Length: 128
Image (tube, rainbow, N blue to C red; front, side):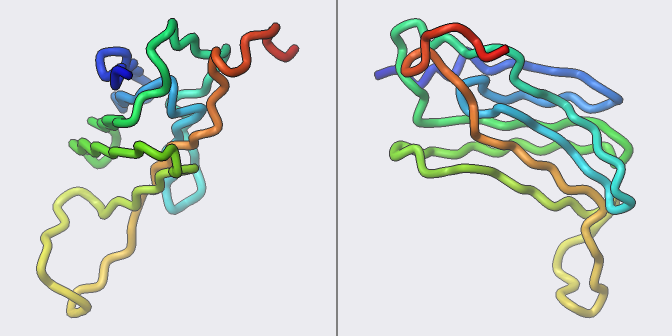
């Protein structure tokens, strides 16, 4: 079974650029601490696997936005166990290593939801 890695999609919205796999992500959003949320991606129709099977490895990338993000995550999930990925971000300019001496709260939270509809197994009509 192939990993379908080349089938990742790239979406640009509100200064962000996100890359994800449409057989994993049904929705991707980024929320600031003030509660404002930007929905970067939402599945609109069923993703057809075209005989390749569900991928076991996914790559997620995020670039840009108010805090100039530059992140890449790779997840290997051969048993299809991951329901959601949540990443909390510090503000731009954060420096590692301070421990609790300079506690900083996250300023953005990104969520990748994995409740995607694919064919197979569901190959009937898309719900209305």
